[in-house]
Each structure stands twice: as C-alpha cells, then as structure tokens.
Amino acid sequence: MTYVIPALILGVCGILAGVLLTAASKIFYVEVNERTEKINESLPQANCGACGFAGCADYADAIINKNAPSNLCRPGGADAARKIAEILGTSAAEVIPVTAVVHCNGDCDATETKFNFDGVQSCKAVKRFYSGNGACKYGCIGLGDCAAVCEHDAIRLEKGVARVIPRLCRACGQCEAVCPNKLISIRPLANRTDVLCSSADNGKITKSNCKNGCIGCKMCEKKCPDGAITVKDFHAVIDYDKCTSCGECAAVCPVKAIH
Image 1 (cartoon, rainbow, N blue to C red):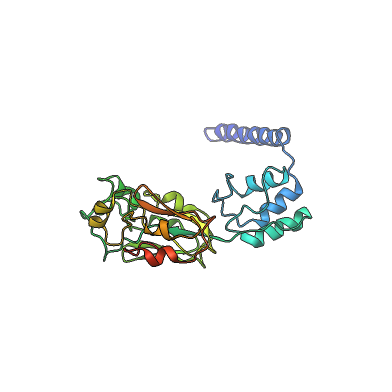
Image 2: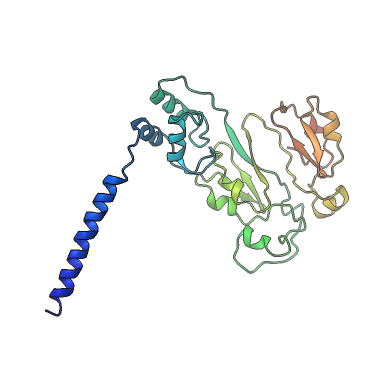
C-alpha cells in the first residue's frame, strides 16, 4: 500500500491533466488560414525580424491580413516573393537585392589597440571597458560577434576588421543588431560605393587614431555630381537612394576612406 496509493494519486492527476489540456485545446483553438501556413512554409524560417515582424509566422499572417507587402523577406529574396505570389494568385512584387556592409577600415595596419583584454572574447564585452580597446572607439573591435550570429558564413575577420561577403549575405540584419559600435548597415547590392569609417571625432583626432579614417574634408561632398554624399559628425555619409556608384568620391578622397 505504501507504493500503490501514491501511484494511484499520480495516475489520477495525469488523467485529470490530460482531460484539462484536451478541453483547453478545444476551447481556445484558433483556426489557421490554410494560405497563412503555406506562406509560412515558403519563407526561410530565419525568424530574423528583418521584415519588421517577430518571425516568419507573424509575417505570413500579416500578408494574409493585408498588413504587409509580400516582398519584405530579405533572406528569402525574390524566390520567396515569387512563391508567396503564387499562393496569393498575384504578380510577384519586385525585390531589390541588398547586403550588409561594415563601415570601418581600421585594420591592424592602420590603427592600434590600447590594451589587451583578458575577459570574454566578444565585442560586446570589450565595449564595456573604456568604450573598447581600440585607439578609435568608433571602430571595429574585431572579435567577431557579427560573424558568430551570421548563419550564412557571410562575414570574415580580416586583419582585425569584419568584412561582409556580398554573394553569401542574406541581409537578415542579425550582424547589424549585434554590433556594439553600430558599424553595420544594409544597403542595395547594386550600390558598390561605401564610406568605410564611422568616426565622429574631428579630422585631426581621427587621423591620429587611424590612418584610414575619414577626416571630414568634404572633398567627396563637393565632387559628387548627384549630391549623394554629405559630411555629418565629421565623417562622410552616402545616401544610397541618390548614389549611382560613379566613383568620383572615392577618387578624390585623400585618405582612401571611400571604397
């Protein structure tokens, strides 16, 4: 009896829990639109949030409820947009290929570190100490937090700076979100001109911290025929909606901060 009674109690509790769960599943059942499930299955299941929704399922639901267009999935690209259009019975929406870019060129030949960090080897951890261990506090820390979250192996560390491989990048935005210095942005793949500096220091300080840093001289701004580049916070910024990748800005940059 010492073992029988506890066993019976446990069995009754299990049966009762099963009955309650079954009843709850019936009472709170929410019917799912068949097309929502199909759209969700056509998405890459990256759940990256680049579309502006919590995950692929939420995005699929938004499309069905006409709260979102069908071309917001960056990792899925044109292929996902085409599949969604087939499910909806509409024409496929245009998808502009995009890629991530790291706005820093402060490699180990151009700048130096202030101290050796013995703690957890991550950019986020180093950033907590004196705004990082680099001479330029705005530059790439180079410990690969961005590479670690990239599921497509599209980021490499080269001479202490993260570099994106456009042909592998799916522009999910995970690297952009994890970078503590906010050096990564998403831009159209067709635009091939980038300012590889994010320093907000004046030209003299930037130059002393990094040989490759933008000094804010505005030569690029004056030379651009389309008004696509301006100097803000002591460094050049490109408006990719206006940029035609003519290369005029890169040609006149005295420190070669534009590539």
